[in-house]
Length: 90
Image (cartoon, rainbow, N blue to C red; front, top):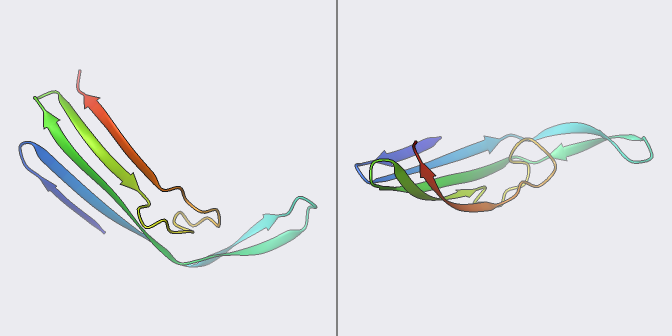
């Protein structure tokens, strides 16, 4: 699910990801094959941007704000990230 907003200076977007439970096969270091359960999870990503003139913008963005495991259908926990940056159009 996605929601977004935009005007002349500000823009914002929120994305929700749903990953249903599944199982993945994996080899252990001793070469035994095992089945690993990947839980159902919901994660939220968001981005807020402010235009600075006509060719630049500053933003803050967050990924996996719910700190959910199994977000990308992987048994490995996904990172929670916060990014701040500047974008320029040449």
